[in-house]
Length: 228
Image 1 (spheres, rainbow, N blue to C red):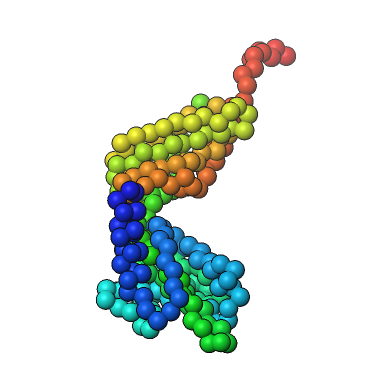
Image 2: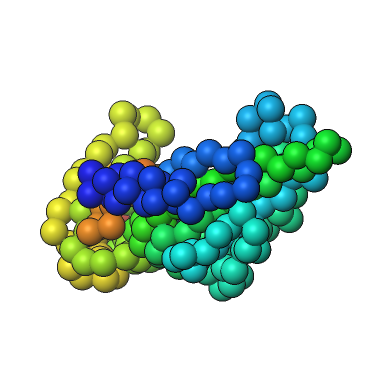
């Protein structure tokens, strides 16, 4: 991540040199593909009128003080519009972007703020299925984990039967996708992946939860012979 921060600092300086004809400032942001990030202006900006955001994916040699945004919606888009003091942007494609916010008041005065955005490849996820989802005590089931991202994966699995403290197990260097774990719980247990890591980073909220229902077997009883 240090290399990314160095690149962002260099590009931020270059960005400031491009800006002309307006009061402007620049910051840097790192997000992941598929992530929606909220951009918010400060109190001074919020007091202005006509606050508008634009996105650039091609900004080499462009004077963004006068040239409108040029990023296609297939790379990044505004899910709820591009005006107001707070705006969400959903990022779809890894790469370098610039977000411009411009505030115009009645004076007229133009204030601009810029974010240099580095979009990294998406964080890995894990999807869980248990098959079957009901067993009798003493039987086995398959916990099937399907990953997104790039192999190999490392992940942490939590098993919680609601009675004992949750059991945490860590798996490393996983290359199978899906990855199957044979489970044999003594009672009904809920499973979830609490963390998964691949080459692109670590996701600390990566999966759904699945529950394996364990039914008790009938207890044994003595057999008596009936003599009429």
